Length: 460
Image (cartoon, rainbow, N blue to C red):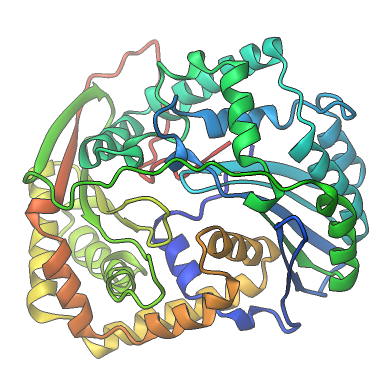
């Protein structure tokens, strides 16, 4: 299945820099009588459209229960309803020349179709049907949990870098932000029909969902079709668990080593930092610009100085997602160059962080970063899917798609002094978790998979 990534710095920059003027025609929004939000953005370059249904439920809501439920339910949503048999949904989409899939995140679960615009009413009927009439068969669930367990083995358990990233989050946080979206290995086989049905009844309600449509459509026709399908479903009481509050401060820096068969060592430095709670919160915008200064483009400091000039690391990535519903991290991950140690890479990164906090960012650097933001806007206009993703994330986070302009303006107003301030305030050792992967000799009978240090933002 195709992975959809909107976590990490690149996704955050795209989100925060996405102007509401990305499409020429005005965006239309409405709220159905049952509380379901509908957002429609015409893009008439082709008679195709992206339709996405976003549910405000994800791994961050799994409090006092088994982990991985949101992801397991996403799988079962493709297994049929009382009137649509297993696999029939996908067959109907394919028969119309389209494609469909879904993804689960810490913050949301979303289902989508990319299809000819004329087929949207049928897609709405299928989505509305499984929003209300899902069949959760015990035998089907048992088989699907085996699929998920294998997915976890491939994505995490057999990937040393993924094991490291999972442990970083589990060390940095105490609450649900520490949990993997796919679920802990011991929890997955314990998910049963009753647990899953309760989750479905609690969260799969029209008043907990947003329909986003972007493409060659007539908004009036799309809205009429939405009312004829989703609008007929009753609203339900959504009982959202109250998330425990993370301790405001760590009890000092955390450091650990993971030993696993691997071809290369890895370093992860992760700081607990603020997310964007209100549109006028200053620090998340400055942290986004800090991430861009460190690793936004080829000329950014860490790839330029640590990778290409000093040749201490083979690769460095900076990751920060300000749009998370749950607690978030600012992470720097690196792979040492041949003959270099993890300690040398960490020292080089710390040197660059100290220099930035001391000297700030030049106006030329800020101009380069803003040009990159402008390029992101332009690229987004060419992607119906990216436009829909931005709308869905903003709506699910409670900001609304209209916040795009204000977020863009605030990001562009970040100064060198702002970047220095957040570097001093948040990238401090008292908020730091350092994870190191120490490679063991690989087992010749089990080839090592490709490593991914980007985390598990979305799973299928």
